[in-house]
Image (cartoon, rainbow over all chains, first blue to last red):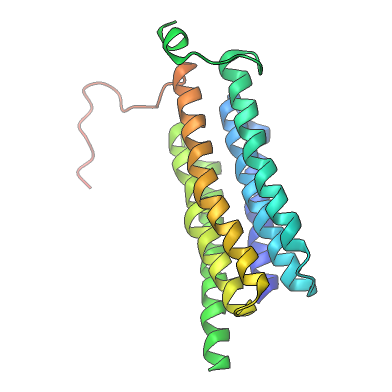
Length: 95
Length: 109
């Protein structure tokens, strides 16, 4: 039964990657990469069950943490044009 | 009891996979950025939740279940945060939602 779930995850991953390639804006690509990261976490957990090696779950946890940090970093860069910007929302939102 | 648990877990895993594929379909076919974001959230909530629950039923009361729960809580908190940041960044950068043309009658169905 894990094979079916893994196949569904791979199809989902293909869809997300197709959207990441097609764009058209940078936010579409970020969204697609974020989705691909979530799917990768689930895929890692499922592969751990499929091969009978639960160590994969630790990798899945680490991947989930990295995924959200990566997404926030990319979004911050494309919103302010700089990762070191302290981000004063009031000043920026006006302009 | 064992068979019942297996069947329940199989149903949860399959429906989780189906919801993930629905989300991917929406991600490919929806017309603009904001609706695509809506479709992608299906993967992160229902798809991930059902799959993790199905795997938890397979693992039973072990450390594996605890790790799966940690992954679930992580996704539960981080994916709305990422989606919110994404929508806000897109809105501030002037990505416009696709609206119906002015004066068009809304669909009756």
